[in-house]
Image (cartoon, one colour):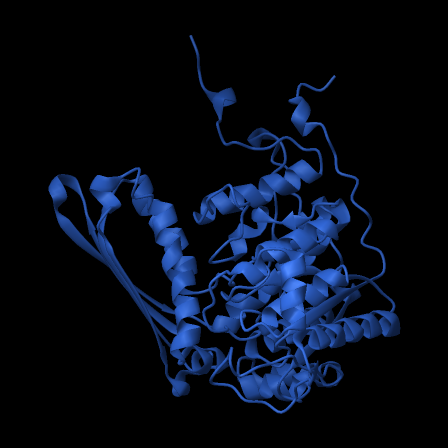
Length: 447
């Protein structure tokens, strides 16, 4: 008889990843989307490697350290194969993924040429878009409808048609479109009844991203929000996700500067270094930078980027170290830089006897290169959750987000290493394996 605790005895009955997996992408012509799509096709053709993707390259420890058992994650849990992915999406610009990839300038032209025929097959449908929510973009490839409910119904029709024409078994939608203006939760977001009434009445607090999330959940598609705007994290859509047994996750892909914060800040806290201030600034020149040049969209992004430190440092627990630090975030649109974002951080800390010290970080990153493997992992893990019968908010995917969604009774966990442990232990739990605490008591000597 096993000596594992009873709660670890359950092995989830995960449905096989049979048939095709439809991946739906609002913002299909953007830099992140085209880098993701082109990357998947390059990996399939053997002309690129999926570096940064846990689902493709990651390994997971099973059992005791002495057993040295580290299978690939994709062999440990029944993930869909990337060869079974079929893409569809929407965008305000009518250009195929080949043209979009060239315009984005993220990938080298010689790589894009190797997969040109595959990229040319991928073209976006007309998007649900409104300039009231994204001020700095204008595009002609948009849907028309008298009400927001009419627009939602058009999206549902698009999804059903895509499903039927491509013999799709399962669906995942990932929001890869632009950051919308800042919105506060209101009464229209409280219940599915109030939300649907708001759709029919064109309520101003219902944004395009909410319309996409509503359409996805109605169609039984798992949904992840890669931007910081209020979207699937409203009570009405969370209620609908539970009712339709759909996994949801978000929000805001954690890629550049915030990724570094969630790596560094837990280290400072674990060594009880105090914090006087953390100043962060960015320059970037892609479409994301252009969108964030609008104060309304920047406000949404700023809230997302500011939130992590308070939850990591927990000023209420350590008021003498973290109750009075200054945190500032700036994003500057600088077209010559393109997708090659540069992030600077100045961190003022203090240590023994209150002596001050400084830390400088200069991260010259490629935004879409960091985001593409995140998108792939979220697609495959959300699909896994759906087949395992786990629906509603997927907190175990917090590892990938700046502003992780959690149950309303909980606070979000931002420490990257805690998030990673949570993700791995969830996979172990799904397969009926014992969770790993890293206690190491088995190796201690006792008298």
